[in-house]
Image 1 (tube, rainbow, N blue to C red):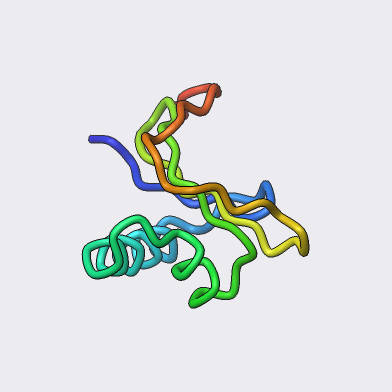
Image 2: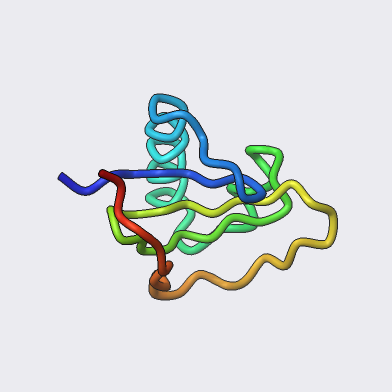
Length: 84
């Protein structure tokens, strides 16, 4: 089964917290089509980007000041190793 993971400034979020954030992200995007910046701000991030990883969907977020928030588009693929 594909995973839903979250990486914040290079650090993977615990699975339960990641699933909860994905739930909030999905609900936000249903009501605010394409508004990544609004979701990022609501959650206390400077930017948020959905991507495709080797194990499933990855939400990459950053709290770093000056992190670039790109417009919503097709999810990009993240290269990496699959877990065990």
